[in-house]
Length: 327
Image (cartoon, rainbow, N blue to C red; front, side):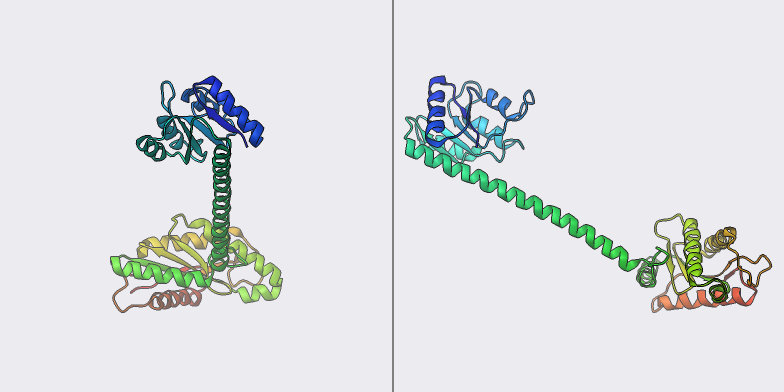
């Protein structure tokens, strides 16, 4: 445990170092001014920081006195955890109070009594060790907190994402539509919802098998997701082959344009569907758009129901198209 002795009296400093080495077996280094001590500790940046566990510092130093030096040490990250024992030739109350206010943990008076000196040194070194253990535990607790937060965030993502497609799941849709509905009601702003259904998907699954069907769902979800640009817009898997898009603060015309972009994004994939009802024999989607400004007493189910009716109109009219509900 290295000890730094700071005293401008070189003979006394060497004598103190010798006692610490012979009686306590400690490693000791010397400095004869506060500036030299700062250099040893790396506080002034001219030398690499020395590994010091305890400082014994004389109150009477040239230039910067010991009390001011202690105050500066305790205000610096490299010195704030190193215990300081003040060396004084007198023990008047004013000097001791100033030393303790500056951050010193103890003091020794000249001439030194070996037993008292070693007892105070051992006590200060125990304090340094306890500080080190506390710091380590605090860091371990901080690391654990970070890991727990990361794990909780991962868990939140897992519980809010659809396992197959990686987009928001039905649960997250229900949470978000409720939040956005309430926000729109408070702010008297418009809210739009697009319901989407893959055309003839049951037939597709029957023909190509469930693994190919799963692949189709993933590709369709990725295509739909690529259209949405705003962070508050939400694409969710609503059911087996059904998707939903929540569009806060989006009017009917804007939602209709987005719906058409969604339809085209899936059509461009050109996923073969031998028994599709369309002439192009590709996987397509039908979409229903609903828009309203929620009023007091309204529920999100009202918006969902209207969008579902619009989706039914698209299906009934031949699929692969967008229908906009008139409210």
